[in-house]
Image 1: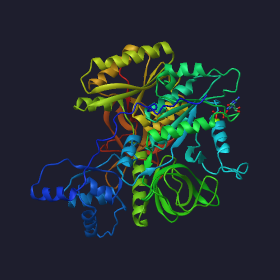
Image 2: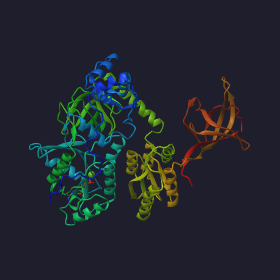
Image 3: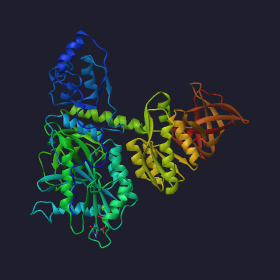
Image 4: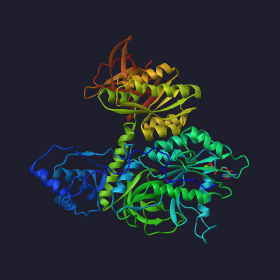
Length: 631
Ligand code: GDP
Ligand code: MG
């Protein structure tokens, strides 16, 4: 029953190996050379925050040179201290470099698993760290039971029975090695975190009940795990049941390209019973082997950085956050920026509520001391001084406010993709396909992939996930995390999915004729899909009276006849059926107050931008422009 894990690379299809390390050492000389013989060079790309040592390496300079430049800026710094982009850019400039900001961690993509690994690999002080594991699978297949069984079977003697878990993650000691489990089972939480730019999981356990087999959520979870390129281990659960049929599970999973090792694939399968606590040691052992293959490492000798697992406001203790340390060591009194909030760590607790004084890589901790509760998936980082931490947190908060006002810039639209292509950009179009029946789903998938043959080189379509049924929230979060568009064929989103898509700016396109679908996607891939806009009427109103303000501008007293007027509507002034003017709204008031909208049956005051000829009896049509699918 033990797994036959053979140290092959688990699922995920990772490309590239070691080597290819960027940036050399001994950079001081490079700088000296450049000063005598200037060369045109690529601007250097810098992340939102980095240590002085990292900056020096990127600039091919020595730490001392960077620190000297910082002193000129009035900053006393040490090599391990972290600075923000603005400061780093000034130093870079002083040393003769142009800079680009790396795509911000708020922009959705975040660092990839691979880049994090490469970074840790190239750090000479990196040490092996415990793997961080997330459990996924279909409802009722035993995720919660498995988490509970592993925890209760692996706590030190004397504590058993009395374990109450305090935080949303825990660490077990399995045969002398530590493994961290994130306690939010399900791929929704996993992908929601990814959509925020966090990659917390090193190994994903896919739980499949041996009596039930592969179910829709199992397939979804596989797509989410693969798109994140996280190694997978399959736990075939409930093997205690008479109806258990582990071979059928293997068969079904192999059909969706999760190939068991014993069948020549690269995914370890372990048979377990969470109920009978059977096979748990095997499972932990396999997780350990996978971790070994991937050489999970982090440098504990630097200020901590990681990800927020969960956070809440506690009535008596204030903001409480569970953090997963991913690199460095977190200590009490550290100054932490987490998402758009910050604070000084007042107290730290482990997963059993015990006060602790240090948290090393892969350890989950609960901390007190932040000013607000950050969001799950926010990244956190320790800073040397409070002033800098506060500034960064404030800047991020402002950036988030701006994003939520402008609708968010994480969105990815088919028309934008098309524009990129038409401007000569090389691009990959990722799509999630949902269809009503598997027959049409298969046909659409094939036809979409076939489009790759007829488009210019460098333009490529790939299918992130394809499934049947309504478009759900987890499709939207997967789209957002992978910058995919969603194609719905004869299906619509449910309410939650629609709301999530609006909030995250995910493009959902609906079709009921395959030809139209292919035509439009192909046009996009040829860079020829211009957006089509259509006016959508918000409401109608009639002018009842007009006033001239001291400024000379005219405002009208309106009665809203139908629909509503919103502050962002455009207004078309109609007089006896003729359009007199079309433009935007300067002011919309009820009594003395500015308002966002006014519904039918109410009166309001209206001023128009650049049009002062409003007359009693004019009718005004309010409308907005919406991008629509081409017909
Ligand atoms: P989740 O929805 O995936 O978290 O599933 P749960 O952990 O809540 O388990 C669903 C049901 O399956 C519960 O009634 C469990 O007691 C039962 N269950 C879980 N694991 C096993 C197992 O290994 N064997 C049997 N017979 N039942 C199990
Ligand atoms: Mg559960």
